[in-house]
Image (cartoon, rainbow, N blue to C red; front, side, top):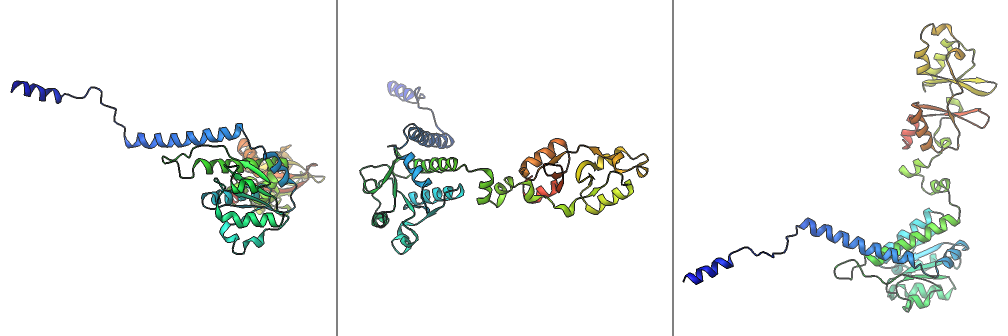
Length: 340
């Protein structure tokens, strides 16, 4: 009896080698890191071994007379749509055609001046068959983005952008994760390579992004400034009484001194405060700050805001190369435009 009691007692001792307990948070974070690591390693493999046809596809698109038509089904379709949007916004006219809709009339949107880029990881997506046949029938250049060179799509393509073999990041290895990330990254690489070859500059970017914060950041001073009708200008010998009336009338809190058509000085609220003693007995030139801070019309509005913040002013006169005033930019104009 005593032996049995001792045995029971020994079984009740804590297990010395018990595995550590993992919290749900630990598991979630470990999953996230695993997914990102798998996808990052796949992108690195793609970077180290870019498809042989990449340069020829860039040259093909640069020499094209029409648009780049992208298509795919399912997750590949979503990626194709995003690549089309990126290409269009960076200077390469592009259009997404849904593969199923293509078989029901949308093939008519594709001309023999266009270039077709079809996405399918397996290369055996049946819905792409009509697009492939249409491209072959009308000698439309066909680019394939796929992971299988020997697939139907891979064999039909004029230009093959082969994705590296890499495991999907999901635990069952089936959900499109790594494969779609690779296709998206390759599409970005293609768009940026084309963008740089075209000499695509910030002013071009704003043309395609006129709205929202991004468009505002790329706006030029000339697009936001107030014109010549808003300029508070006086001659250097103008009495301060008349100068203050001009400042009040124009409502921007400053006055500019104009001499022989050139801006030679500026009067701000700070200048008025520094010259309060006998102010009304002085002329504009007695009070003004000479060689004023100005900006050109081609300066980005965001840069002008940075200048104003750095110099602690709220207004800039906009002048041409000979210091002739063209307009005036107030910090409130930039705020309304979404720049500041």
